[in-house]
Length: 139
Image 1: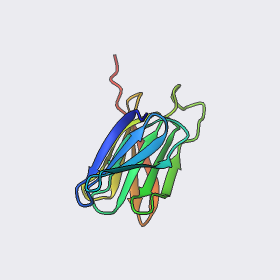
Image 2: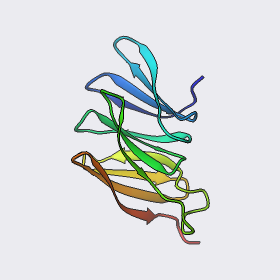
Image 3: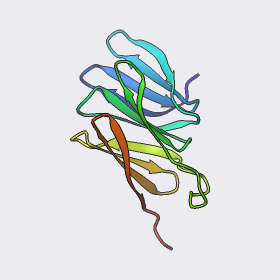
Image 4: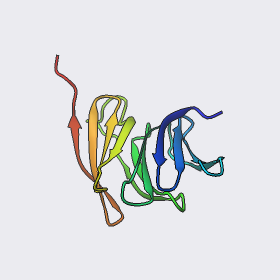
């Protein structure tokens, strides 16, 4: 049984991607109604998913402190950024729970359980970390 955490639809190809709490990425083809597990994507639960508006790619973020970019045709991971765990790391690490790819296909933003937003660029096949914004409201 799949416990889906995020769903994204590629209108051009008619493909639905789902990410699960059992660290899998599931692909569903609308035309043929075929579903398949395409990859065990992370070392922990996957909660964040977004599709590139410009290329046949999607990105995932998980509870394993990692953001990954995938080729939607080959279903292979083409880029990974994994945060190192240090003394400054939040107690839960970087548990990514939401993601968005900018309309121009250049910037990715992933939100964490503890109100951080990690901003990345994806250019020329390279996923580069830009900065971490803490959106927690001071009380």
